[in-house]
Each structure stands twice: as C-alpha cells, then as structure tokens.
Length: 151
Image (cartoon, rainbow, N blue to C red):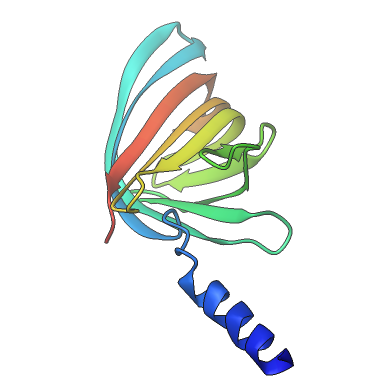
C-alpha cells in the first residue's frame, strides 16, 4: 500500500505541466521615453534582444533582459494571486552602460505574461531614469514592452 502511494505521488508530480514562462525568448522592444531634464521631449524606444526567465532563490522568478546594445538587466518577480501574471516589484534598479554613458532605471511597475503553451512572452515595464551621456545629465520616465517568441 505504501509503495502504491509513493508511486502515485511521483506520477502526479511528473504529470504536472511545466511552467510556460520559464525559458528564453527573443524579443522586439517598443516603448516611449519622456525626457524631463534637461529638455522636455519624447522619443521612441526600439531594439531587440533576449528575455530569460528562470526560477529564483528569494523570489518565484528571475527575469534577465539582455538588449543587444547594452548591459543586461536582472529583475526579481513574483506570481500574482491568480497565477496568471508575474509581477515585477517597483523600486528595483538596473544600470545600463552604453559607449557614450550610463543610465540607471528604477522600475515603477511591471508585468510578465506567457501564452498558455509558453510559445510567446511579453514583459511590460514602467520606470524613471537618470544618467549621463557625453558628460550631460538627463532624467525622465518611460514605458517599454518586450515581446517575442521562445528561442
């Protein structure tokens, strides 16, 4: 009887569907940044790269955003109560280094979703930023969406 119960438990664990959000995705970036200093202007954000989602040690997930022209950003994330969305906690920061300067982004909001089969993922974030380029300081806010298929 006991061995049947153990076998049934193992079979149940094996039959569970894998988490569709775990893995690596190729993304296309779209978004808008609104510079508030030294000028007031909006510019589109575009780019490509890789989104990697792994299980975390302190949180449910670790999300790594590796855009093709800068250093990667690593964020911690948690499943929401319903389990259908992954939330990126506000206050996390990422520092990006470019050939002409650096910028630090502070997350103000963020969600990550994958379709049921895990074929596509979408990360949407809001943030404030401050940095320097060519020795000139700048600051503002932005929204970005990273979306694409599994690699």
